[in-house]
Image (cartoon, rainbow, N blue to C red):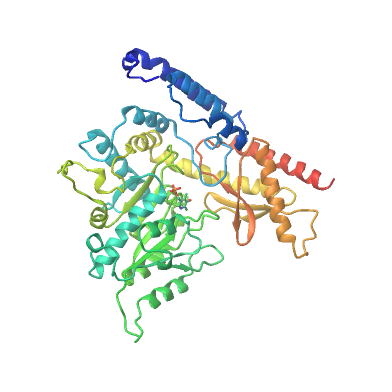
Length: 497
Ligand SMILES: *Cc1c(COP(=O)(O)O)cnc(C)c1O
């Protein structure tokens, strides 16, 4: 039903039933979170059948639309905001941030410019300064609120590309990359592939990337790192040359939470004039706790940092942050002027730092989250997640046929399961254990009481234990270990039949 034709819809009285119905759906969802299976239970076919129809010619009244949407999505949702979800790196929602996010949609501000939403710009600026303070980043850093870490990489690496080419006398804004000096990207072989995509978006291509070998601990090998830099900056005749170089390091990698040695690597990189960017999608939060900050020693010496709000900060999707020490390069690589948007002299215009034009006011939910938690609340959340990760890995690791592959130092750990029916000296033992590990994960997820994901790590199929949700309680952790115990015995019983 067209709400404009339905004139009554424009008045407050008629919005209320819809929004109240929606509120009740939301409350119901959150109340049931603990009782509902974490995994979805509807099949792909069922979901498609429910939704697939030609574009309707006639409209439907709004309450019916929402009621149907809720009924038809329910068992197709993953309970990733519950406390029993440990797959990938997916956070939940701090209550005030969820509420602020609703209001963000209600207010429907365009947070491109101060002029579009004065308070949107102010709140985003305050929240950005708070995020810098949370991570103890240098005061001179500029920042951008992006859709996620992928776009934060893009924003930071765009600034890096601008500055590194400027260093060799090339204006990339004017000339682009046609005929430009080659930009070298040195990164770790344990990087997240969103780094490769950002490099591609920036026109530098996969061939610009040199992967630095990592050591047993998952961190960049310092000698290899230095020799790559030497190679790039040494001309054929042995003389030294200046080259644009961007380095991307990890804080932390997604399998084992490996954090590169910034205190050593950043000074070496700077000897060669390179720009050091950090993928801190979740690991930057190690800066926010006194228990973990030693893991990221020296991180403040780097030049740019990308992280996420929707992971360890526990604000709703989608939210990421880019921080750039050289704010001039940041602004020059992003800013744009146009006839109809007058630059604000005193206020901060987000468009000067963001890749998007029109955009959601992402500051409100971040502000609300930090206001609810405070510095202490974030620190507690980080410590709690690390503790829960360790307990899960040790608790599950103590079960029969389980093997701990990585005891967490942050909030990521790895396990696998050994198939008891397989001769472990046989040639295909690894393959059989890989399959068994997948089966055990499926069995656990099928209980509905916990959810884990698998990955490939050092040629093995592994079960990841990744904890970033504020909601996970001590009780959840013990219940989950019990669920895993039951699922594993069920699997072992069926293999011995
Ligand atoms: C999730 C993740 C990314 C990508 O972040 P998005 O928010 O999904 O864009 C990058 N790096 C690491 C280490 C991650 O865990």
